[in-house]
Length: 348
Image 1 (cartoon, rainbow, N blue to C red):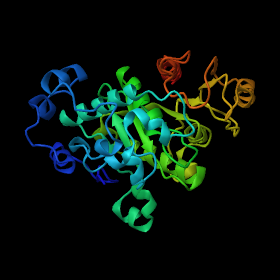
Image 2 (image 1 turned 120 degrees about the vertical axis):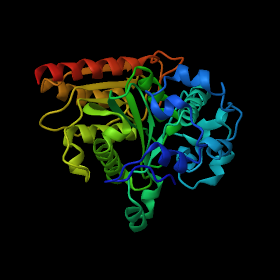
Image 3 (image 1 turned 180 degrees about the vertical axis):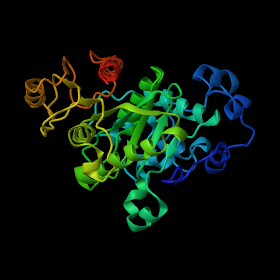
């Protein structure tokens, strides 16, 4: 897997090229100038990376642009049979999800590959080789990064999957694409599966600690970060919001400035909570709106700023909501986060 930045280390552009197997002939702006916008990247590079909806997932993870980390796109680690599924049938691998839109995934993959060809690193290991040797399950972890403006705040999102798989292709990269389009930096955490909530949340806490430690190298601001999650991932995000990264083995860091939760029955609550954006489908049979309403009432009872939405006509796991009444909620959640981040800066 890609080595990425490690604790106490720095990774130069030359290191990125070596790690990712890219040609050393990078565009001059990527080497010496400011980070390219996606429009500039598209003008300087081939228009497409060759991804299409009828492409096998195996062809995606073996794509030359994704050498060294492509396997982390799989919902389940080392599940080679999943590689035979085409992108337009990706929903077969995500039983807890709905409203699968392969065109969103193709767009996100094109963005990922475009960033790579512009000289950007898009995947980082969060554990050291020694830690992985001691616990091989940690090899199946890491963070994807889609960049916004240099020095902007960051969001980190945990896709769902019932702690049995990670829906990076549905609730990870599509979210990150939308968040980064708003000029903010967006990380997606790939966490351990099959070990339950605790191990997964420990991976998210470690990822946040990694980002804080390497903020300068990553080009992000650690101030007023937000945590996002959907379904099982929303439990992880909420736990970080309530208890902070330290409670799950991370560093002693500030709590997030906002928690964005999609369709979960998570009930844990602390003495104080960050501003919280909550969304759920009216027809959700896994995490019914009534379950979320109870926690929202508790948050409001302690004067926590909350935005709560019940979306008509959709069920569990609708992702970005493209083509449904939920469409656009990612941008609304970004607006909520930024409004409360600005308020926090003013108060401080």
